[in-house]
Structures are given as structure tokens and as C-alpha cells.
Image 1 (cartoon, rainbow, N blue to C red):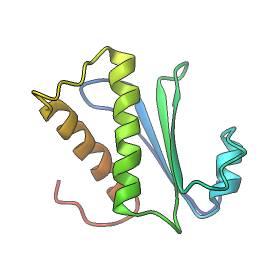
Image 2 (cartoon, helix red, strand yellow):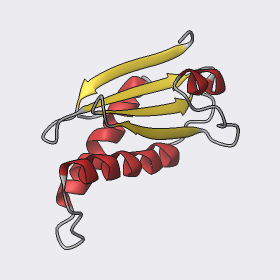
Image 3 (cartoon, one colour):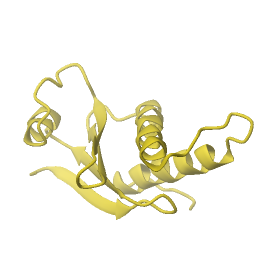
Image 4 (spheres, rainbow, N blue to C red):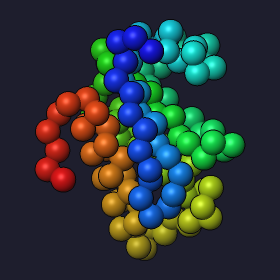
Length: 116
């Protein structure tokens, strides 16, 4: 993927992998991953169950904190569902810590400062 920042890391505690792609040519790179109808999107998250990997791809021209948070929720949903983790609104600290980790990973990837 030319013009794309690409990083894959292990997901702590829950296992599996997270692949983050920040793409300068979002439509072309999405198509390379099998997603051909992405014209109205600025980002997406997709689970590859066979590889136990979540692909998290962003259009570098339209990435915002809100989009990162939105996609982080999808990542959490994939991980929690695959691992049988129940989201408990009475004890949402595991979810909050996980979202924090995903967002920090994305911001490290796009080169913005993160405190942790």
C-alpha cells in the first residue's frame, strides 16, 4: 500500500491482532482488502475471524477524533463478541480501558502525541 501507514499489534489481555492502516488512497487500499464500495466512508473496521485480526482503516484526509472513537467502538464489539466478554454498563471500566487503548494506538500511528 503506497502512501499508507500500516501497523499490526497484539491486542492486550483479550488476544488477537489489530492492524491499523492510515491510507492516503483510501478507496484503492480498501479495495485491496476486499471492500469495493467505500465511496461514502472515511473509515471502517473489519474482523477476519480466520486470522484473528481486526483491520482498522482510515482515510488520512478525513480522520477526526470522532471517527477514531466511532471505529474504536466497533473494534471493541468485535473483540468482546469473539471472546465472550459481556459489556456491563454497571462496570464499564474494561470497555473504557479498551477504547482508550485503541484510540491511543491510532493516534500513535498518525503521529500525534499521546500521554501513554
